[in-house]
Image (tube, rainbow, N blue to C red; front, side, top):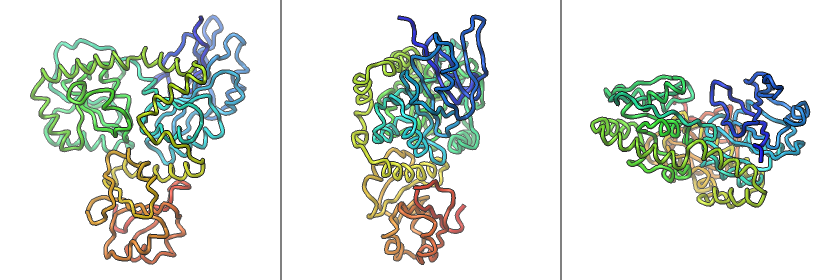
Length: 455
């Protein structure tokens, strides 16, 4: 059987996370790709606008190059948005990326998929968000981790240098990563950080005694796969159980997991003193990667899911969802989007490290607790007496009575899940405790307030 003809839509570029080659007969379409045809007349890539009618594009292709399978990488910022998807007669699969940051990552994608219907969905960077799309009843939703990660060459370094290597971005979207790198440097640890080409990155990770990683916001990010592929000894942050990281690789055997800055520094010092142990962990991690997550395996798993019959695809998706009971409950669209909107606000507070604790008032439905349990960097409780950067979740009805007994704000942030800016003028307790409304929360995300004097 000849390989399938695939049209692959992506917001990325040939120089930054190009799509995995799923077939010899694959055409790439995206706003960062050129119009390109080979000498034999085969279309290699197509340039498009940010939003484009995919059915109209397919109609322009020669008959023998029209796709058997349309794959769309859809990120939460909607940088490349196929429209009129349902008009395609071929199989249609969406790969969902980057729902762990941004102002409305889940709500925007849930709204998109409610209009543009695909035959099946695949979550790639955020396993802990699988349940949002399963609950939306959009068809089969599977888990296909870091689909576009390429196997890194495993160079044989002349020697292993006693340094902590980091290859990647430390820009404004990565405040925790930058803070942890600075903390290691202040502690006198030998940190080498910077960006590099793929081959250079592999060389750095393979030749360093430790490879540092920090997820952007709880995502099972590409560097976990890249470092282990290159044969590096990976030192990475702990993620929530819902990501499945602990099921893929064993802490202390295949990689090293840290909890916070103090734990990171302590473990870095400990392992730098034992290069033989680092080498054994690196070898075990690489072997485990090759056996379970290598590029050919991930490619074939995805294709098996994409081209399977509806019944088989549904069975494969249920297998991916079985460890998270949240996937088994279908929710009305309105309720799902409202809860996703609240979750997004808290997720962003976690990303920029403005909170370390979430306090949930008695009037808040227990379902919200289930939603936020995978926000792994913040504690969840119902106690308001502790100090710290806390966010209080409450309902508008219970708010006056809840705040009345406090002479000082019980939390730095207050998120009223069923209200908007109009709540502030009508609640004397908010004014008395110097809570000020924060604009910019996406629709449905409640009303967010912060105490005066906080920055």
